[in-house]
Length: 420
Image (cartoon, rainbow, N blue to C red; front, top):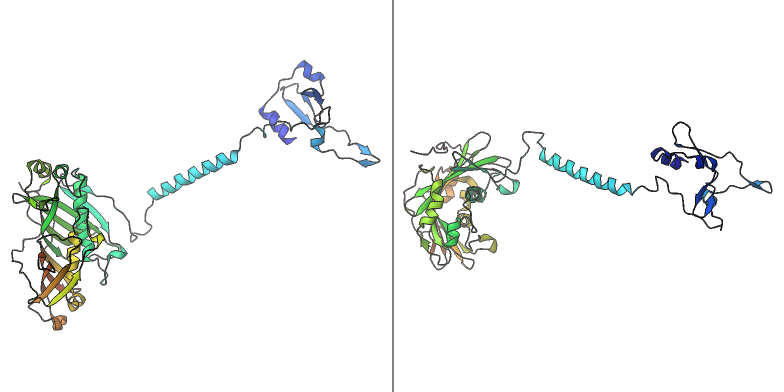
């Protein structure tokens, strides 16, 4: 009855003179009595009105017999007729549609919550910061990095490799943001056509203070000309909240043919691509003009042998990443120096590259100090050499160390304004 009433409310039927005289509705060839349910038209609205037949159920031998609704739907041959088609029976499977709509809304809500998420406490880490952006008239590239837990060392500060990787990452992203990244790794489109790549020849880094876990550092980088066939790249790393300068670095890069592995002049086509991004400024770190001495085994106080590149140490240009060289140089640093001092600056000269099959040695000597009395020593200077076992030089280096937890009062660096 409820289903029939619902049907009548959605599908009104206009009464006719013939329907008023008929008490049974014809279905197929037989006349079917709808289980004792009669319908008659309403005089006011023409809609069907439904009410139950008041006839008492039949009795057999004094026992009341209840007839099921299914038994009421039989034709003259006694065969059961199909269930009457009502509005409910004609509806589609709404559960599937509702489930799909619910899934869509839940997914949209999740995406919205991720986009609108904000930290509830100011000390919560916010990560990541994207690829960075171009600032200062399109000549300086800026990118932020969050120091993660796996990037800190035994001193609870960011490792040297972490900081150097930040410098390398911003250099590549600078080329990409400026539209100068071709098919190669850090190479412009014209460089790719001529099979040229950039290689670093000299680097100076000053570490004023090391960031710790959870700190957010801001890295600014820019490029300038260096002689006729070189390019200088500078970096300035600072605390994103306070603006305190943490690290300053400058480097010189030249071009090498990746097929012949020989140095090359800068072609005019390549010069035309990169010169618009050059800044006319001084290096962020004053050049250390002191000559880097060559060590040999007789001079070296500490030697680390058997260093071999792993597959993961190679970059896409099939040579060892320059950051890996720094780790190998520090392999031979005496343990008392590492325990009582921290690296404050380093100067590196890259002499040649090494491949996957190379076997290297790391040599270190401590200048003007006794390793056995390092607790009472202030600044320490070390000379380094990374070479192949057969004697060919890879990297010469000089490092300076200060006592741990000592306050640094180095020169305050800043992004240079372009000179006229």
